[in-house]
Image (cartoon, rainbow, N blue to C red; front, top):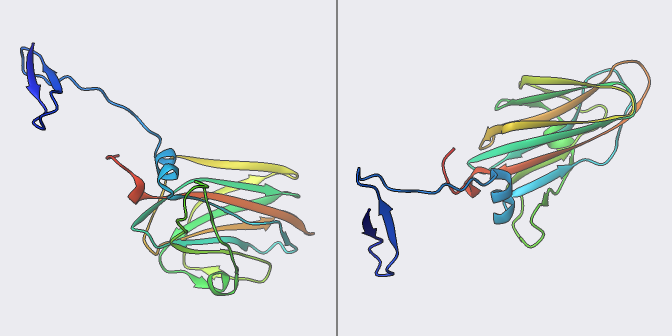
Amino acid sequence: MFQIEDGRGTGIRAGVTTKYQLLTKAVTTDALYEAAEQGDAFAVPTDSIFISTTTETPILFIEPHSEMSHINRVRMCAQNATMFRIYIGDDMTGTIESAGTVIDPTNMNTGSAKGFDGIATKGADGLTFGGLKLIGSIRAGAGTNYEQVFSDSLMISSHAKFLLTAQLMTAGSSEVCSSVVIYNHAAMVGGH
């Protein structure tokens, strides 16, 4: 077997086969774990929201400002049967962004002082939205919790918008809640 020195004078050598193939070892790290370790992963929860209409209601709005953000999971809960919808896009209209209650996302690394680079708001009855593209619908039965995990994450470019809505399936009222886990692409230390 041939040897290649690292060139830094440390005496560390890499093995090379007789066919000049470099022997390597790969280590796989979960992107969310890596981002959390760097202080670039955030939980964006809403408290309970009471909706009292069968009109689709925006309940969580997020606009990240980092170059590329990834949404890893969306958690939803509903007291009564509710249809949740996920939207993304650039050209949003409506009042959720300006009139929603500002949320301060929680850094998933308690030792990090980094704050979320973007906007997050909690919605309520009467707020409006429009202009985004529907990417998925999830029907939650009464008294259920549901979690949508994106296997490779949902990628959102800088200043694009993410919106979660809730719509009662029958007349009445319901308590709903949600939480999103989002991390920044900049924390990635390798290719995809």
